Image 1: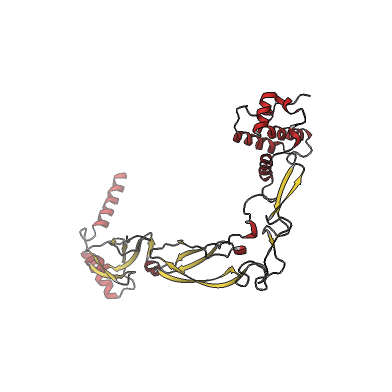
Image 2 (image 1 turned 60 degrees about the vertical axis):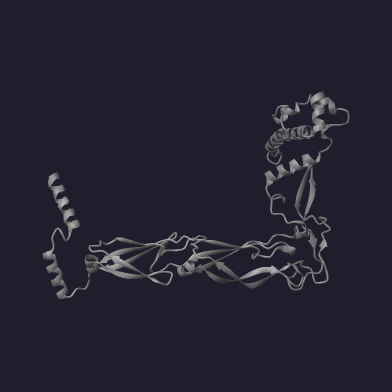
Length: 377
């Protein structure tokens, strides 16, 4: 029975590029892989045809010979199925990883030779007050951290001895096994990917190369930080394995709720109750500011509840900038409570003396309401 055209098997044209060829091969091989089609003989035969076609077309010399002489180029002892080159093995390794993910040792996160891995990043939370966020501060952070063992300098071996190259993987940290024509790479079961074995472990760290210690770090918190600000301390995280680089420490800031001020970006807001008399006659009051001083707020005559006053540059500093936000004061007119008999009499007298001129807003509102209902009827 005559063989099918290799280009046809992979579903490509003769002008196909190397990248397009590899992509078509990966797609076809994954579709017809025996593990995805258990018990399907037709898929198994198709899979072998795909492998054979790709072995020829991925090799420049074999592809040129095939384009000129067809299958006859390989009929005299140079059959296409005689072996698999490095490029084929690499492609099949990629496909096998796509099929099975990291189950068979594929995927990222490999340690470097000698097991020198980067340490993990660490996180801690620090709470500060709004005043501290305004001024900035230097905070002390205390936390248990894995650090390099000083006794063995992070090697994990007892002082005076050294780790040995793993005899199983030859120091690579990974071993390769053949399953049919697949080369499957796994983490070395002897050294667990480190590439080294320790015959005489350090008495202090028990061969880990790291010990956990309480460390106190000083962190500079700049003025103007906001809730959720993240500060990174490079190299202050978990120590690396076998002398590898340390990870980083991330400090997440949270700001306590303030009893008087609410913050919105660089601006501050504050609600201040004022008496009915002050609102009617006018006056002034003082409010404290975060810089330690005070600011005077003048109330005009006839001020209504909710009136807002803006105090420029009395808000929060902007992080890494010379700009400063504003402070907004909202006046809230307080209705008198628990009145004495005399106070009630005075208020009744005031009510009797009141007119549209003293209460223009309410007079206008009720006047419009009356006209509206009169018109609707």
